Length: 248
Length: 261
Image (cartoon, rainbow over all chains, first blue to last red; front, side):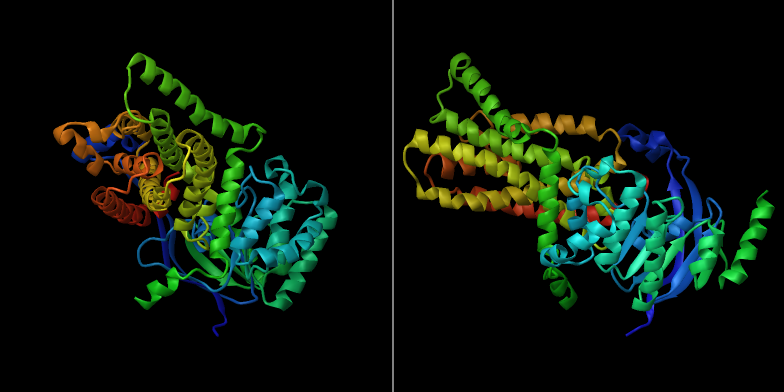
């Protein structure tokens, strides 16, 4: 068995942005005869990356550096440009505020749906259901629609599902940082350590130098869609800070 | 080739997941209103009443068993319309699922069709009660109805896949859809008998699968007649062809479509 959890080869991402006028039927017809102003924005250039199983992998970079795009490409939401290959070796859950839940559904329904996506059968979900609810401390709100949840509650629920429905890979987009109260933060930190033992892989996109330093084995620094470097937090954080100074 | 066959065999929880998605989609559509399901049942009954009154007393309709004739037309047409119209918004409403590569995107459409099917079955139950009371006997031809239903499901799936993808690329899809909807409403024989049309006009049943499906559904449900197998074969094959086109369009353009939102 390979020891690689996530493998990215030749990942490029170009967004092409169409003018608003070309998205109607009339605009389409007109644009067949005229040159439209189609703009291309290169969001990622030539990313090659192997993330090992059980690794806590950080991604740093300033706004617009392509961090979130990279995470979205890993999760399959956006396809990379032609020639790019993504190999995800395991079931994953995207942990990002405001993504992944249907706000119209209750917590109970979202638990069932998300755990099912992670590959659990209804029977298995039944077995871990209570653990999920009590870990997220949402016993009183199980049958409340998630749209009424605070972002902290929703984050707790997502995290609890990922942990108890046994996601192999956590893709976290600025997931910790002001979310949940102190006791929950403590709890998640404890899980991080335990999970490393269990061999879960964590990809953690963050601005927070503190969290990166504390948990990550390796960090990738992105700048304007390009890989500036990969290394230990001690090697990469100074680079990141240098870029911050330049920016100012 | 083997890969394809293996892919086709569901993983252990795939069917369960499709069922969960269908159930939750159904719940969401009627959420927050206790009367949700009641409205879903009332809508076709109300339409039935109005059309029946108008066509019987104003236009002197002479179609045999006209009430049941209309009932079949209305609930099958509503089934199609609900599914097709819903698919125009599916990229928004199901984005969180479509963006997850761990779900086969087609499963989301199977579940959307399944969810509308649940609604249809409620209406169909209401129809069956009427049918039993008015026809006063059970005809074995009803057992052929599942064939027609499968044909309709394939046609619905094809329409959903095509419409959902096109809706992302053409912002004025709502207006185009309105035209198509009107055309289908008048061209599917909801309140008149297409088999009575003279000459080439009757051929519409062969070109518009919905019209043929309605005709065959009435034969087996209302008139205790067998299927018109020629009509069925043509409708069925054209639905399959449309479905293949739909899958192709969806596979080719859906990933890019998500970015455009």
